Image 1 (tube, rainbow, N blue to C red):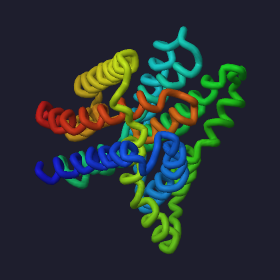
Image 2: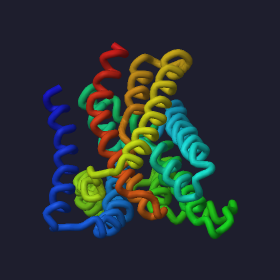
Image 3: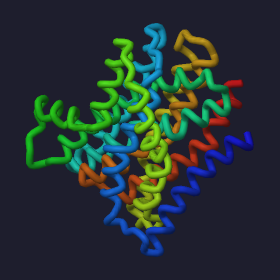
Image 4: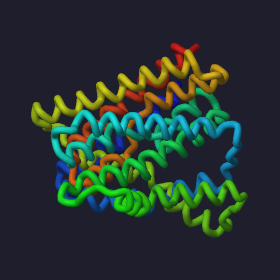
Length: 303
């Protein structure tokens, strides 16, 4: 547990570093979009390419991918509906910041440390559906509703969805693995070097976007979204334990994933949709703190 606590603390410390360098003037809040583009378009795709190159997808476990996708869709629809009378920007914010789970950079290494390396395969399959939901559907849907001057159409939605570098990366990688194709070692050497910087840059980006001096309205809004998100986390977990016909190990991993933090890319997506970056970054940071304590607690409760 000491090693796990150290890993979790290191993520928080990187966020603190990002916040501090902003406060002392090394960077400014105006630099956030630059870091966001680097993470979403360079380091995260490279990290995905590296991890997926030898990833074996077995058909009997694909239900985990469906669960990851379904959980995202339920949260996204909820985020859209609770802001139905507040305009497209607010709806886009709800879609982006209620859905998505930080599996690769947080939950996967955290769960592996708690339950062993065999848990990575279950978490990875869940993350495929999670990423299709967040980086594909969520990205396209939020961008389409955020542009209030333009009527949302299926064609426009699909165009925005396929303009997401993360969605395209996941789609290509998934097709390659289903066909048994791998990239050359020389390519993986490059992507592993670049992708190795992803966790640091993603957490640093959150720290740069974080604004602790939120006004009362923003604090209320952030905790409203977090309360909805973790209410669904509890519901999903109860349904998993009571009705999903799988082993207790898989049930435990799923319940831990439901309590994992909001994906770090959510703050970048919020910026691209013209949303409230400060509130998104605050929610992201709080969700990491909750995840640090919630995942071991779920494991203890599940026995």
